[in-house]
Image 1 (spheres, rainbow, N blue to C red):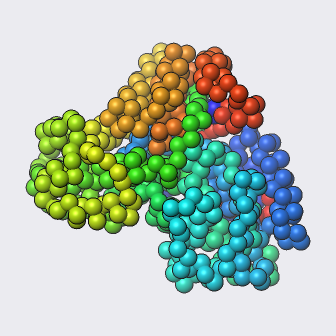
Image 2: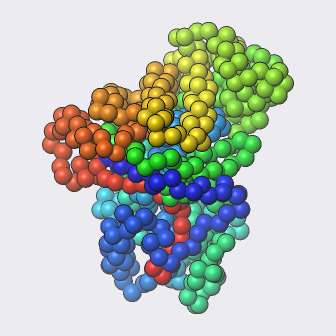
Image 3: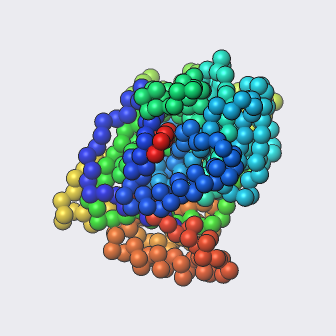
Length: 524
Ligand code: GLA
């Protein structure tokens, strides 16, 4: 369980301009909050020792880091290009890198024993084909390498000897994979820049301006798809753009833009509880995540066809989006967001879903062409496409994000504060209900933890991330946090996992706060 304690009304920094560069820092206190600093200092000391053991006689040139994220509201709508509201957490992936070896190798070692060392010749990296069917930890690093080539095809990747240390539980819905890909991409870019400086020691000044945040995000989004999940861009945006003590309103259309949003008051906390049900998008993609992307894309294309909206803008070479549908309705017909929801209900009348043959008739495109275009790179399995339910979830969830952000922009008086939190909480609860019923991305354990949170004083609670396992986020008054934590232990963890070890419990129960995004650290 992670507790997010917002600081007392911090000032809202300006929106991050697209040209912002990933910071290069020299002290851990610039990376972590005072609360997490002591344990992070110990961890980084251990990283040095472990590096010396892994690569005797070699010094760490720099460390690239990228954090996980938790999403407050806006689930499964990023790939439809609607705004979302995540925040970076303090748990992160560190990649300690030595550059300057002359062996022409990319060496990867991991502080966790479960991940065996891997080696690749750097000369073969440009054309390396990642096999997305194989569940292999180094694929995430290699996705980052692909992303670096996508930004600069002439890149000369130098010898890199790396030690990876990840603290985001995998499959927890807190985005360990995107954090890893972003950190790897950043590590490669920084290694290229650092190599050019050798034998002069690398300095902050020399590395500053190496990687633009928005370039890093855009490239990481595309390159992470090499591991077989057709994901949106929320995780990478939060990981790279994170701002301490702030949520991030991430906009994808008309272009990527991230606005930090402060919280009002410091009487409440967000409690994040990992159900410990591992949600692996890579394994279940064909029936879960990738299928949802296909359903929402086809729904958009069919709405455009049925309503004569013309061709929709295409997202990342895949297909039209529901955001494109809303924009087209607004521009060409003056139809409001709520109006589009009504239109969607009239177009998708079948509550039981549509066969591929029915979808093909509505779209006026042969089944084989649909299969080839939308279901081949990321294969899916289904009997019926749930076009109505998925569309309604996406549109209603997008409306919830706007309402949530509108509330966060208000300054409640002390007398209003309870109603204020209750309103935020109600939006979170209706998001969870929609994820459960219309998007079918919850599971009994997530529902149980949400119900327990509400029964123990939370204002609101919902699954966070892709769902089908992973974590929940609950909005709670600080004075009720302890009671909630006790109840979750007693009623959830000990009951569902009777043999749970202290170590596992410690991973499920820890404290974090909205934290800094990606960074490069030298000479700390
Ligand atoms: C995963 C994906 C994100 C987003 C969420 C659901 O985390 O990587 O792009 O779609 O699921 O909101």
